[in-house]
Amino acid sequence: MAGGSGFLGRPLATRLAGAGYDVVVLSRDGRSPHDGRAVRWTPDGTAGAWAEELDGAAAVINLAGESIAGQRWTTAQKARITESRLQATRSLVQAIAAAARRPATFISASAVGYYGPRGDESVTERTAAGRDFLAGVCVAWEHEAMQAASAGTRVVLVRSGLVLARDGGALPPMLPPFRAFVGGPVGSGQQYWPWIHREEWLAMVQFTLEHSALNGPMNATGPAPVRNADFARALGRALHRPAVLPAPGFALRLLLGEMADGLLLSGQRAVPERATRLGFTFRFRTADEALADLFA
Image 1 (cartoon, rainbow, N blue to C red):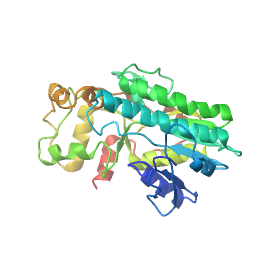
Image 2 (cartoon, one colour):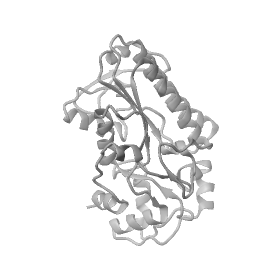
Image 3 (cartoon, rainbow, N blue to C red):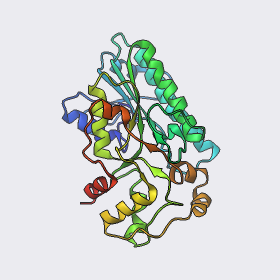
């Protein structure tokens, strides 16, 4: 697993190890985030000595990449966001192709940002790509990952939505205004936020690993995306706080620049059509259920 020490990779490695998988984490510093084994790697677009770990592996999971919300989207930061994903994916694809016993499955991260801002349109895996920065990143990222299919490996592209957890991701920065009784919608509040509880995301990735009929793109989102204003009200209910004071769009654009539009002020009404059709069972069907569980 590449990216096994991050917000999603760490709990995924722990979950899979607990399910009986022999998890090997590819790490820049050679340290494992759980009790399993780690191997040092350099994701520079080539396959190094670490590539022998992929020989005979049941699956390779790729979660590596620079955080999209770590800092303002300068030209240099946008290049880091893009290249970190392409180089890591290229390295893994080369290692898969070079393996004497090629891995059966390659699960590679992507995002619902693939679709770009879609307004009220219902978005499934059949929806075309968007044209903004994040869509361009996802298109290029997925193109690199799909090269593994030519080696006979099943490729699944996990297009993640807004993953909710208390210890990282998008949710913690939202909490201080609500706890100070000044929380509320972002911008107009009419944009859709395709949320998913992190435990559900972990279960969905394991489901993907274990269901060979699933290949190509898969939306990793909850079954009922909500408008941002409804999400804010659900968060307020979970925290027992009001959700009436909006964060003005113009202020967010001044503070964050292009990132405000890419991550906060627009969205996708994305639904997990493929996982649902293949029988994935959701534990958290509404944003209220997910947030109530996180703050119980």
